[in-house]
Picture 1 (spheres, rainbow, N blue to C red):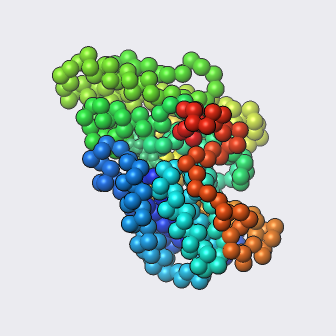
Picture 2: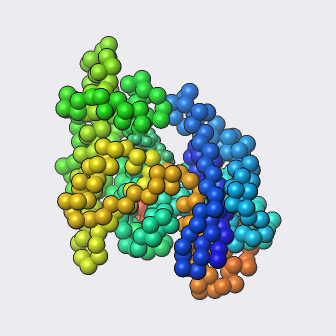
Length: 371
Ligand code: KG4
Ligand code: ZN
């Protein structure tokens, strides 16, 4: 039995969770505390990294305490401490990782530095015991990518946005149309009252092969259309939101069909399945489209509960636990060590692609920045 504390601070959620995992890998979430800082960032129409970092410092001790109390677990009973070590807003990542290292050192237990994307990638194994291999579509405010999850530690990025993440495009579209932050739910609500056929918006990159996507041009097209209509009425805003959402659904639908095809080519004997994660996965229109595509492709679409699809610490604890179990199977003494391998020396990282081949070639090229 493993009891794991997880810490997540890579964006604007301050989160801590405690999991208990039995011999067979069955997981019980003893606590999962997520404090959203959204009210602190709303006045600015987006996450302000400096404000987020300060808030994490103020909140994290209390959130960890709350997670431990709710779980009714003593620090001495923890098997390991895990935290997001990147990718993310560096100020927040530093706060979470350093706190985790301090706790691990104080209780003399292993510290596992977790890649935030690996947390999202493995969530469906915690909630639905999904077997490798599977596809992951991660669509959030910071990330938009298709991953092939082949095995623990083996991830291949199949495609990514080359500019804005989808959630970011929703947020920017909302902002330019005068809708509140976060933009996703606001745009979805307005879209329900609008007509998606009024504006012919582009489907960027749709004519190109592969699984890469682009959303910056779409957002600009919304701006151009809105400027032509000034003064913009409420119905125009609704129609623009509906047209924008339809364009995003078209792109994601077509790319997902292609991802399933690729999976079938690689694993002809394995039933294709795709897990969706990230805040945008809450969008009904996008979900409906993905369900249609999955049905056409005779594939399974798996959506873990929303609370575990958006940023949380349970997924970080789980990803750390999967690695710990693998390492402990080879060498049980690992559970007695203070720090696994070099993890105690692991530095907080603003960028950290899961797929080594996807490292940004030029350091901070746009293609590398959002992964
Ligand atoms: O995963 P998440 O909670 O946090 C990170 O970005 O890591 O995702 C937040 C993003 C925001 O950009 C938000 O606008 C978007 O997810 N979002 C949505 C919806 N709900 C949240 N986008 C479209 N439709 C929604 N219903
Ligand atoms: Zn995330």
